[in-house]
Length: 196
Image (cartoon, helix red, strand yellow):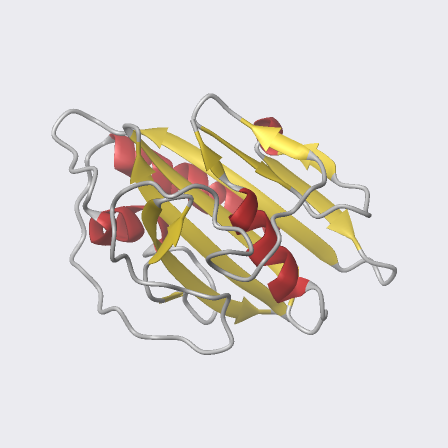
């Protein structure tokens, strides 16, 4: 599944660079998802920690690029991969917890605020069964982005994406749906994101 996700992200990134356009999809709500909050203020307000979401940011291994950084949950060993922007760990039953970030430079003329297009180009046609369902937008470290999720083969696939500082950024999680840490860890990682 991870190989399919990485391949789909690479192909989707290529389409973004080519300026490919897709029709907009509806914005259905979701349930049992990490907390979402529609944007009411476009002014950066700092990292969404316990003040805004009630979640303490993750404090484990640091993952960073020139555009952003985030931390992984502490207390487990994470194997960094995918160019240093993703990581995987396993539970005692060898169920994978995958986190994967992707950055694609925006082209001249791309609308930084067009989250609907960013979702369509980034995640709209990924081969999940069932397909990703677009959720509500949410604000992470003062930047509004889209969310989407599905459950495939017992894995909760949750994605956050946005356009910021002339890049398209997305963060995909593939965590065991039944693990009690799943939603807490997703929220903690999101709460740890800092834009540069």
